[in-house]
Image 1 (cartoon, rainbow, N blue to C red):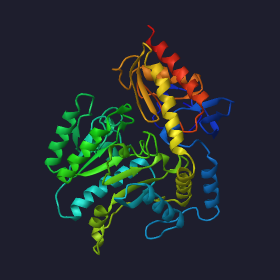
Image 2 (cartoon, one colour):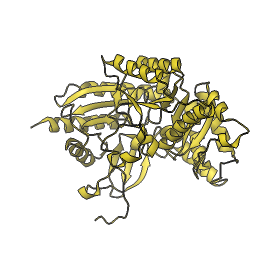
Image 3 (cartoon, rainbow, N blue to C red):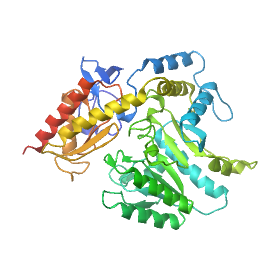
Image 4 (spheres, rainbow, N blue to C red):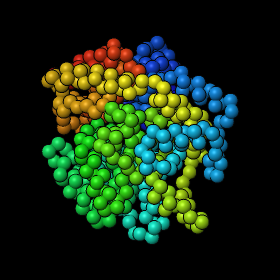
Length: 419
């Protein structure tokens, strides 16, 4: 038993691994109560874009806290949400005209799935099958798990999950198999296809080419299958552009955003939809209402943080920071790729990933915990996905800290590879 009553996510407490107590954050660095300086090399689970406790975001939250803390959003509204919706309309694809607020990536996906099914039901068409990609991850609520990969993460909950169509991941040289499988599903009347654009995050930082994403979108369009882009992780510059879809010239029917939406400071998400999806739910018949909400939908404090994030994107050289970080990551990755313990070194924008100790280790192998312990001892917040090591830091990370991160990774993977 531990002294704390907290049950941590994705943590097997029976292993008695240490759980550091963090008291503050600044930029890409976290500070623990025992005086350690921890480099946050994964943006605290991919959310922190501009750095911890960014002054503009913190100031916006503080200012909003003196005005309005919470408001029911069913039939009521407030200025931070109105400003944010207009701000998102200004920078997101023009066809995405409607903004629905939720509070996490998982719920933004649930909303997208419900909107897609509601679209067909309200049109009087029987299209109910959802198509997904192997190795995908879209969250841990029931609908989100249903459209993700089946395995150790959700095996215990299998009776709750609904059936979906699946297409293989487009491995290099085998892309046509993915496209052919998607063509068959869409021709069979699939309601929607949901995909993580360019990078499959929790599935192992698997990366595929923009032209494949573009062709998948075209297949869906030919058959009227709605295209859902889950950009919860890939959005807000992670892949090198504001949206990963931008690199493929793709505009989805439904777009899921969270994580970097508030710069990582507050829980908030949106599902953006086209006018056609809005129109399918717009009626004088209350039975066609979109029935979804949570208590904290469009929380004013979170919306204020998101508005500050949009202001940072407008006023500061964020794209330049992204380009610089991507270039630095690429230089370091080239060195890591030469190590004997490294395979499949890869990059997409500011994200780099590699396999340590072979490319066939399962998620529950002992490689991940061994690496995690090494990184923790070296004052690095790095959390391998099995034997997949990845670096996805805040855009504010210093060149020296980034070099330190890669040096620690190099030392760790070389030790893992040594018999």
